[in-house]
Length: 232
Image (cartoon, rainbow, N blue to C red):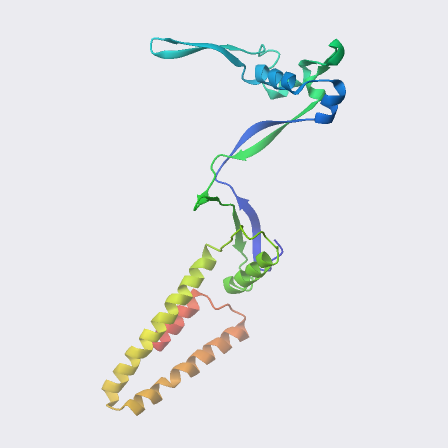
């Protein structure tokens, strides 16, 4: 965020699933004399229950599961009132020592070369400085974050396509110059005249770049394609 020409910056998630999370207050548990195993056992019986015995019937496994009545503990949102045994024979409500909250978790974790990938997307503003300038600003911003050495980042999307276009354009313009020079040599029968004709190409390119600067337009893929056609 904060990069000129880049809007709607957000983390990309393939999908999220809600999940209840409980955070015990260990200091309060210790002060009330509630043992950790008592808390663990109560949560197990209250959420999924515990399997006491299993047997096979008709090729299918059958489990004897014991859990709290669902009218009392139908889910994490109903667990606050369950009582825990504390030191001295007293009892304390589960909601007094555990903070339950509903969170969202990704349903799919993307990995590259065994490392977890976090994607952040953004949209290029139509009136912005263009993808090339935005890409440089993004790279400068990421370099200034001081990320750990094991964290890697890269740019994709339109910025990646622009970089590939530049690489392809450099090779194409070189090939076009060779072909144009060959045709001029064949047409004029003189290498000197052919080289003189090629002098118009740098002047045309300089004029095109000057016009882009005056109009405030970025050097995008369409402009590069136009320059390539002009050389041809």
